[in-house]
Length: 274
Image (cartoon, rainbow, N blue to C red; front, side, top):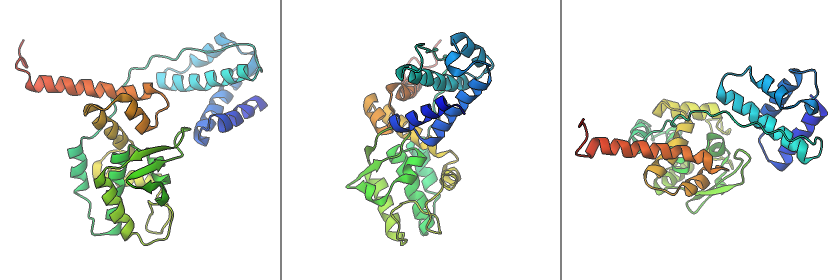
């Protein structure tokens, strides 16, 4: 790995507060670009980069590599390592509507949980916590007992974003309190396995999959979708989700439109007319 990529990694860590997985991904893309040509990274021009990118047919993969490359050359120009400004436009990717569950589907799955056991109380509280907070699973698992105060939960260690505070619905807070009362292990963490260790992402995934047959991230989509369908302001939803850009949140407006279409198709007197 070149010294320039190492410097870029340090910049992302200190100035952008990105997680190690994202930084490794950026570095991997740049090393791939570096080995694709006999030129050094600072000698490459836009045409060289486009030739490298032409081998990637999947637009999402292409855009991920473009994000790495554009960020790198912005860094180089900002630090005056290079006078060239390289900024290649992203490929247009058709947006798929995020999969989500409605509240009835979630409550139906919760009804399958045996809450007479500690593990059942945990599973019930975890699913409600994810649905009520809109957390990413990694964020939820990092929440400490001290982070839940007065019906609010502090979310930290997100994808490079600042801490945020999210209110918990009373039913989710009550489920969490019942679980913590039954949890006699002395730990600052909330979500524990039977050994008293912090629950792993794989274990949390299995819990959600067992009762709802979806991934934990679908509960995040379900949280946002419920708010948008209910008429919540898009910027408020952005803040609750911890999105740095409103663009990431706008995909949920398509769900609102689909919901409106379904309502008209079901109830309007002209439904079925041709």
